[in-house]
Length: 241
Image 1 (tube, rainbow, N blue to C red):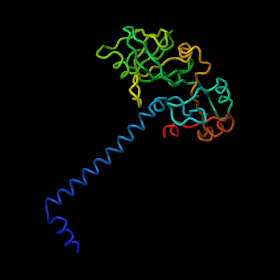
Image 2: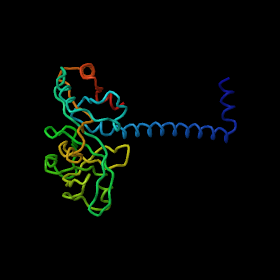
Image 3: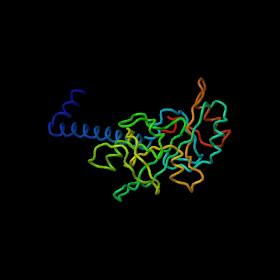
């Protein structure tokens, strides 16, 4: 029977080859779609991946994904710091803004505000400049792809000036960052600079970045934060997925 089945399968060479090619092409398409899906997932969570310092993300209990997070009251930061098992916690800002270039053109950008004292959430792979340069007045960093988008065809140059919400900023560093889901330049700034960009906003903290104490289970610390503060707390892997 096996011999007869094999003869029936290969008896017509053209149909046999068409069948093999069809199966091969279908397999290729399925593998490609999985790769595309994983690429979209990684891009949508690129800012989560780039934060290497913290292992806990704390946010409003109704947040569905990283780009849709309401601002938290400033006292939530102190409440998270008071939860047993939390070693430290800092504030983190993420929003979109409009950058006005000296020639009058403008670009929408993704703005990330990191803690002034600890620099948790700041880029670690610098192309030009030093991390300490972010401490300078009006300083911002931009990702490499964002620089090429804002100043296409021009060599890397620090000291460029432009405006965000009519506030002067100075480009003090170019870094590498994971590509985001949208093709927006990524700007890094200190949290106090973000407060200067949006002076009328009372609350500018979307997230609290925290770290569990050594020996503590991060998942148990997340549960303690949720019970004590009424906020959503996730590990980095949990927030990614």
